[in-house]
Length: 104
Image (tube, rainbow, N blue to C red; front, side, top):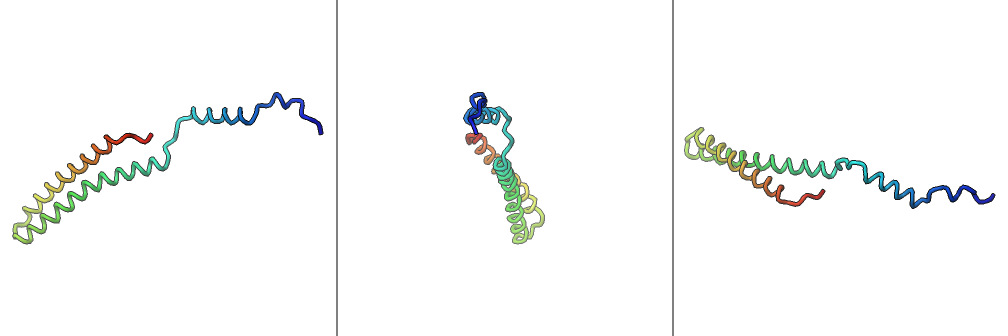
């Protein structure tokens, strides 16, 4: 079996690889599952900040109401203060997220 006379006309493997890399680079990058998981993690952290503040405020308000027999006043105050504390924590978390450099 002889040499292929058209061998010089065929592109090399390196040229094909470079062309393939160029084509891959020009395509828009799809969101990776890691990025999606990271976004879910941030969303869960932010929502847990708010819910934790409400939960703790509720518990403190209920405890004070039972101890001082003033139902429902401390519960309402605890809910309001817990919501305010949760918003404060949520805003602090969002500020920290915005100050961090992006991985992209």
